Amino acid sequence: MRIKLAVFVFVIATISTVYGQQLDPALQSATIIGSESLVTPNIVYKRANGFDIKLDVITAGPRSQTRPTLIYIHGGGWIHGSKEQYSLWSLPFLARGMNVVNVEYRMAGDALAPAAVEDCRCALRWVYKRAKDYGFDTTKLVVAGHSAGGHLSLMTGMLDPSAGFDNECPGKEELKVAAIVNFYGITDVAEVLDGPKRQDWAVMWLGALPDRMELARRLSPLTYVHSGLPPIISLHGDGDPVVPSEQAVRLHQALDHVGVPNQLVMIPAHQHGAWTREQNLAAEAAVFEFLEKHGVLVH
Figure (cartoon, rainbow, N blue to C red):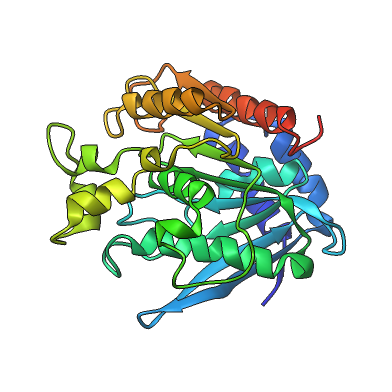
């Protein structure tokens, strides 16, 4: 089933009513390119444990033209949320001429860790396999997400097959991304699994697995820091009560230590992602400046 982006443009137009504001220029641009864009929703990219796991593809224009592509992974503590719920997060990227792949994955209620990581790696594999069909430029793939989606974006872009999470979707393609955008994602799963910073959603994701602390280490992006990784930008509230901002600082320091191009943007906010409009616009500007600097987008 294919639907014109005009349906999404109608949704965009309602944002000004919700916020009592005029549309931002990026969203206004999205309405202009909407006439040439196409949404293909609910493509099954993987089947596991009786589940059809799906993604949506939104092209920023004719599929005969190759474009930089955003792979977006939603948040929700690995236990709730849906790709539909967070679909508007990707609109500024669409307005910049990027294709968008909006990914769902199995929640903890359907499959415990590491299923979500395995699913997202399979989604990246699918993007490589279907690149010619949809105009994905595999040299300019950006993986991005918020909160648990930030964690999954880091894992998706930092892993290689030796980590052992690609076994459900093996292939010959070398899975690389051009950049990772991490919005307040978890970088140390063990820290939120046990101890003073414990979070119930992390406990639910790991369940009662006997090796859960070792698995938590294997599921932590900090474990996979090494030279040669793609550029990474992290954006985090300095007083985040859910995912400690120190996790973003530790990732930034570790990446600096091995020479990986990266940037840490600290937002003066004491909430988990509930930033002001001005803070969100500043974060968006920092992301696009970063992507331009590293050759993913043209200024």
